[in-house]
Length: 157
Image (tube, rainbow, N blue to C red; front, side, top):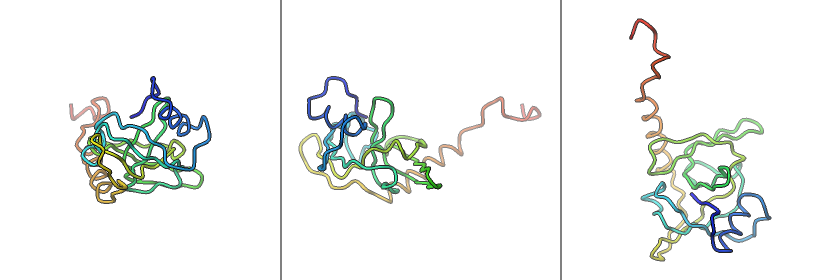
């Protein structure tokens, strides 16, 4: 997750570009990953290399950057449903229990690489196997949740 609170100028410029407030540069943008939601694939504190893109360009396994109000969130794409002009993207942080559906129009970038906090370079985090495992984990979580009490038939109470 990224927040615009008092970042260095280059990070603020990247945040502005990804939120659509200024044109995106042609090269990759760099922003820090502040949480551990993508661990172990990408550790907290890593610097993400982000290519500006749209929801039409992401596919299962990509780590995409989504606009969420004034924040940016980087999570793995589990599934993309394309229905005419509307794209729906199921995303989940690798360390999270369940995912979330988002509109494709909220996608503003794709992570193309990263640097760990100690400076080691990481390659493209695209991983179809991680997306498949994440989708299974998300579905398992949904199936195990009991329905809310007010939706149970009266004879089962």
